[in-house]
Image 1 (cartoon, one colour):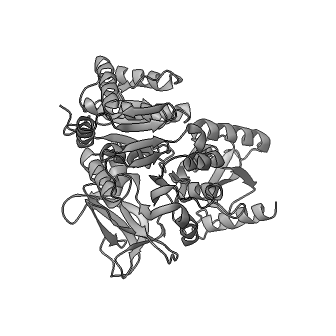
Image 2 (cartoon, helix red, strand yellow; image 1 turned 90 degrees about the vertical axis):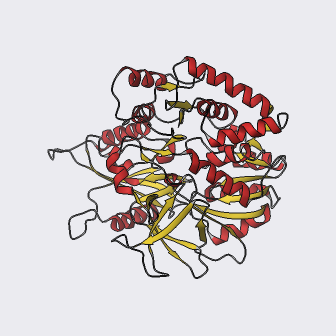
Image 3 (cartoon, one colour; image 1 turned 120 degrees about the horizontal axis):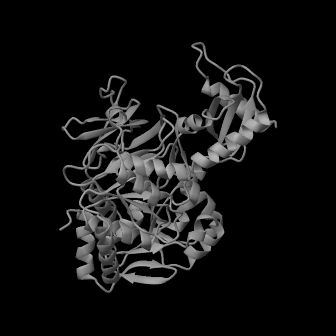
Length: 496
């Protein structure tokens, strides 16, 4: 019998409400009973393929019914799901399969065979995934951007997962028959509560058509034809949707997360939602670490909330000691929702994960915060060069590492700026120079660089423009001056 508590909760609702709609999409509705039956059939196929407790299983598909079935099937066998984006570059998917040590993959007809081939490599030779789970298997491994040039896999536990799901269904008062929108990629952790909050509270997942991701006008018109539902969305997505919603009420509850929520946007959103929430949380703390309901009057910077159920927080100085009340420091979250670490990366895990005051696992977020007089946490920027692109966490160092592997690129600096279009966009400042000082052909380097970025990085991590310079600013210690690079890039953009 599976030990996955979120699965047990779903099975409870399948027994209590077998004929209720579990999933609603363009093809119709799938009842709880039908979903359970389909998941068991898929689990039998996986078991025949050798999947056992603790097996890491690649799940390469889009959001919606296929993914939900695969996830439940994996958990029925006490296996570990590893969601992968079918649209991601082939080498990135190969790396993720190898790093996670996936010994199986859920079969889907419309895949390109890359993941299957990578799984075959894993099962026929050694991997760098580290030892298999010895205790309770993880719920899933989700890959995020890594500063070393390769993504890192975050191992999330079942107990923290259900605790987070219960927090949000409880906070929003969701229960049997309530609806929640699913529209996020399965490799974006916002998809986790979208698809699992309903299934663990007796509700219905309302799956947006895939066309919605590319067409905000179509998305808005589709939303207006649906009964109001709860939803998660990034501020970037909301900005695109709002002009087409015409102030119509479409969300019972809306959790804004993945990026900072400006006060001006909160005011605009107010007319289309019943209750607005502002959420914060890295993947390493099971989707969301802090959250709060926000109400007018809205003022910047908006509060990012207080720790959700199961988590506690400290604000630390450089010596990892608590800062005086009201001062800015690094946010450290500890408790049930903290991930095990990065799969196959003991060094990275040791740098970011530590022990909390109560002896539980703790995660050093790298985010600077302070606690206001009302107890609400307020975000004050990053310690490092990590940014958010449409809700996806991006390490600028990963982009730079990929670029600097191209022959003829001596230095590359990635940055996010709003100077050109008023919204955050990625740019790459590049210096071309051969290692031996010989002249290089800028056009050839640019072509090779564009091909490498396309080959190695997912779409949301590819810079919109490459800007070439003879040299980049340096500080007194000889290191690249990122503020100086930002200045010359924005000058170039402003005066092309």
